Amino acid sequence: MRAIDHVSITVRDLAKAVRFYDAVFEVLRLKKVYQRADAVGYGERNRPDDDGHSYLSIFQSEHASADPRRHWCFRAASAADVRRFHAAGLASGGRDAGGPGLRTHYHPQYFAAFLEDPEGNRIEAACHHGDEP
Image (cartoon, rainbow, N blue to C red; front, side, top):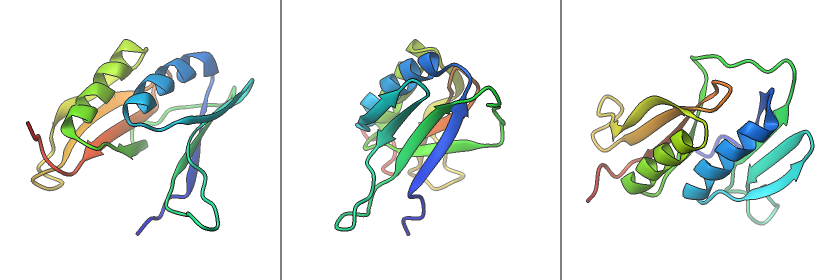
C-alpha cells in the first residue's frame, strides 16, 4: 500500500530548515523541486501516468511547533545511506534522536536512524535490509 501522497510541515526559520533538509535529502536522493521565500518542496509529485511517489513541503509559519510523538520516516536504500543521513543531519544543524542501528523490535532487518531538525521536528531514515557490509 502506498498511502502517503504528500505531507506538509511547518518551521519558524526556513533558512535553517533548508540547510538541514538539503543535506539529509541529498543523501536519500530526494531532489528539491522548488524553493520560494516562504516554502520549499522535496521529492516528486505524482502524475496521472506515474503515481508511486511522495512529496514533502516545508512552509515557514510563526505558529510552527514540534511534537516529540510525531515524526516522518523516509526510505533509505541501504544501511550506509542511513548512516550518511544521520551524519549529514548532525553536520547541518540537526540533533541526534537515535543513532544508526538495528531496531529489531520492528523486524530483524530494520535499520534506522532518527534526527530532530533545527526546530525539533523528528525525522527518520530506514532501510529494511539490515546492516549489510
